[in-house]
Length: 104
Image (cartoon, rainbow, N blue to C red; front, side):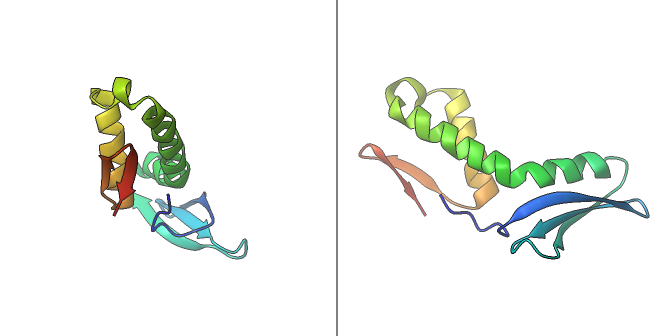
């Protein structure tokens, strides 16, 4: 699955004047900010945003394995929530039809 996220490594670039910066490094050179978090939970939010590309990739892999046993997982709440979260994070719609996922 391909997402519309900024490619490359994302990292928490640290805090400057109470704001936490998450940077993307699409070509392994100087990065640029993809998010600026502030407030009492700024650091925690920056860590969560930094992990987003990895979380999407991991969730996509889990769903691919679960799809192999669709009869057991398709109707489960956890499976439905995983698909819902992946769709929300990627802005894509996934429909299971004829034994395969269609992504739009």
